[in-house]
Image (cartoon, rainbow, N blue to C red; front, side, top):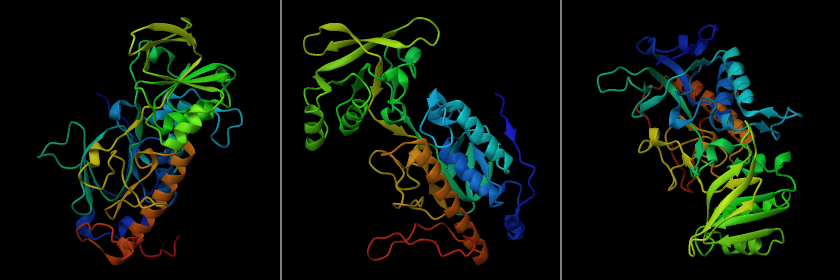
Amino acid sequence: MVHSKVVSEFPHFFLYTMLPRSKRDTNLVPSVVIGSGPAAHTAAIYLSRAELKPVLYEGMLANGTAAGGQLTTTTDIENFPGFPDGIGGTELMENMRKQSVRFGTEVITETISRVDFSQRPFKLWTEWNDGPDNEPARTADAIIIATGANARRLDLPGETKYWQNGISACAVCDGAVPIFRNKPLYVIGGGDSAAEEAMFLAKYGSSVTVLVRRDKLRASKAMANRLLSHPKVTVRFNTVATQVLGDEKPMGLMTHLRVKNTVTGEEETVDANGLFYAVGHDPATALVKGKIDLDDEGYIITKPGTSYTSLEGVFACGDVQDKRYRQAITSAGSGCIAALEAEKFIAESESSGEEAPVNEVKQDPQGNTAEYKSNPLL
């Protein structure tokens, strides 16, 4: 296995020279970013420009996803500001990576497999070097978790061939592209997300059919009523997709879908130029499970409007803590927030000479999370 490292030419930042001599070791850095999507690279860009010399671990097919995250599976992105003609997902992430490196981020193509948050500096180990006798690959005073979330797939025959050529897991991201306009579209799922996506797609498709495995919707009553009364939406209960069909030529588009009635066993082939999955996402939080607070779906819990997790010095941004919007632009914005808050935390820790064990983020009597002290540099 070959690991690549891209090291910046920037000089050591001024805060590092102020550290106690006992903490000046070759593995210690002020900040580490774990992730490779828009949130991770935005955080790295802001930290780099603040001369905090971040190290970004982009992973080696971490969680089965290539560096760059979910956007690398997207062909054309038309709703990211600054690109009036759209931009490919892979190209966008390559540009973000180049920008991170340009400002001084050290990008390492290895996967962080173990962390120790019990005291600062935090310790991190990489895959294949995380045994009990291995020294940590890095120690850091602040860590930003931006590991994302993966859309669940159904592994249907034809799914891989027509992914992003008719199949998508994000109606808001892809629904308006030309291949779906005035075409019959299908949505798989029975919850609120499926209902929302179906009604969004109804703006563009000639018709929208929702396939629900069970005999009723899981969506809220209000959302279900809106869906069932929509003039362009049909809901087919007790129905599943069994195969995706389409053009056989390279980069051919989806044209049909095989569906099956789970009660009668009857199968048929229907015209379908788009298939949208609304069956959930899996946040990549196995690394931090049991170390910081997660919700019942596995997402990192952050104080609303911030990147603060339940532990001081550990921040989270992007889809790993956002199960509602899941857009490239909202991920990037949350990466900016995480970097500014990590910068603030590092500056305050250095000014106080703090080397104490990590504490949980404190709350006031009203249950509000206390923010770090104000930082005049920000």
